[in-house]
Structures are given as C-alpha cells and as structure tokens.
Image (cartoon, helix red, strand yellow):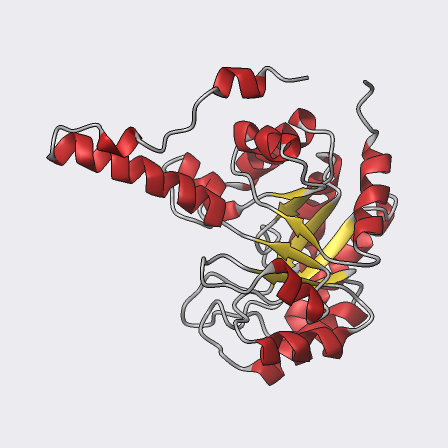
Length: 273
C-alpha cells in the first residue's frame, strides 16, 4: 500500500477540522505513534513534554534541532497527519519564529501550534502586539511554503497562571485575525469556559485539552462545539505511571506484582501490516 503524500495528509487534516469532533492523541516516540495509528486514530499530535521526558529532560528544554528530527521521525513512521507541538516557535522575534516554522513545515507535519508563553516566570506571556506579530510571521512562513500546513494559535494564559478568560478570548480572537486556522487555550476546565471560547472564535475550530481521568467525555466536548480533542502528555504520563509502579515494587519490595497489567503480544502487534 502506497503511503499518502504529505500534501494528501495535509488536505485530510484540514477536512477533519471542517465538521464533527475528532480525537488527536499525543505520541512521544515512533513506537507510540505507530501504535496509535494502528488503533485507528485519524491524526496525531506530538507532545513536547512526552518527548522531553523520553530523553530524560523536563518539558520545554529540548533544542529546536532535536524537536525537528523528532517530527521527521513521527511523519516518516506513520501514514496519517501529524500536528507539531512546536512550543513558542523557538524564537522570541517574529523573524526567528518564521525561520523555525519554515523548518518545521519541511519535516512534513500537517499542522503546527505556536504558543504565546515566554518561559520566563517574571513575564510569562508575550505582550499582545508581540504575540500577534509572531503568529503572523508563522502564517507568512507557512504561506510561502505553499499554505497547506494548518496553523494553531495557542493562548497559554491558564497554563502560566493568568486565569483570565476575557484575556484568553481577546488573544485567541487576535490570533484568528492574524491567520490561525485553529485556536487552542489549554487549561480550560468548565463547560462554561469552553463554550465561551468556542463561540468567541467561531466559525474557526477549537482544540480542547482533556488530560485527566476526571475530564469530560468526547461526546460532551463535541456537544459544546469543540472540533478536536488532544491529551497532551497524558498518554506518556500513563505509560510512565505503569513503569514507576512496577519499578518501585521491584526496588522496594522485591516483588513483580507491578507487571500484572503489562501489555502482551507486542511483537505480534507491531508485526501487523
């Protein structure tokens, strides 16, 4: 079976955003990416945290070149669209963001997100005008490359402790006007917050992060108008949770009870064609 071209994957990805609600899970390496594809998901999104943890590092500490190589591996290993968690674009200035986005598009990703967080606790968000300029630079870089890569504008307010829904909406609307195809405000938790964001940026699609077992269901998110649901580093955390439970029992008790729920038949699973 011939793998779909990058252009075809990008076209498919855009179609997924046109109606309904789909789940876009977040693999952290090639094995988890290929497993998720074989489980039937229609698209994938990288996770900066999951990838960093797989390298023994905290989130947001991976170099741009390492992230670009990671994206190339995910795209090459799968046949479905991959959306890049591209952090804050690996650049403080619009020019730097544009160059990073150009390189990301070359990896073959079908979409990429740009955050407005600075990584500096003393000023956690870029000012609005800078954030808009950075997003617009990303849009222009994508357009110069053909324009078919989907751009996601992220307002990180709730993630960095600026729990202001009005500011979140103000930023998302500005990012939509600057060229974002999809909007994303991680940290929203209540139906009222979600509905407010969905209505504020309509008709553009909204990505919702659901990363807790206490989260609402996909059906409930869809009923609020959410177009796609991602899980961030939650799948990676679930995997690490199983690893730590088994390893701690082995280290502290000398028992193997932590292996009781271990996956079986992995060679058979990955041997499927």
